[in-house]
Image (cartoon, rainbow over all chains, first blue to last red; front, side, top):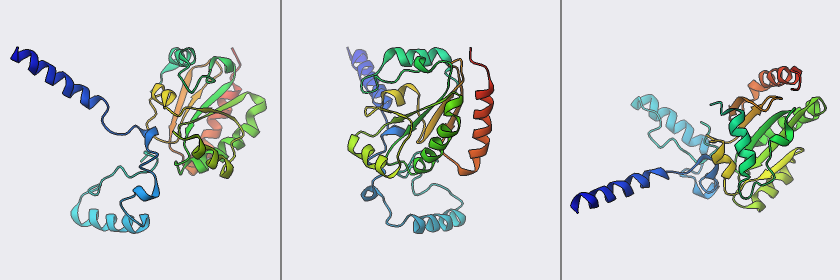
Length: 71
Length: 147
């Protein structure tokens, strides 16, 4: 019985990953201006450039953005 | 990457809800570009005028372009169309059925089919610098004889 339950839990958790995230064609809401995490994209780009130059990292602020999903 | 003609055929046969009018088989013998676009997609504002000009230039030689809109709200698409008119066939796919079928990776995405209906090329995003390259490829496809 316990095994069966474990299996059931495993199966549902696997299923949970199937619809993870937003599909590229569903980014409509994320692309809205009031959904942006920054107020000025250029500013953020500069900040990010300095950040990754100093820290040796890229995409640390989150790479997804809300745009076309093509980057 | 290349799904091939078989998938293309099933796409048209399945006729997903909201995209019933999508039928690739209808255009067999033409070079077909299926272009996925959305009102919120910034590069689409560049790619669509280019596609318009391609249609104008090569439509008579057998180029067909189908724009698949994936906006959930039709009003958003209509607003975009007022800014950026589309001079080719538009299919509305608000539920993303066709996008799912084509496994769209980003916007804009386009899929190029040759005259035999075989998928020969896919493009993700739109770069101004690649325009000429794409046009040459299109011309080559158009020069191939229809089956």
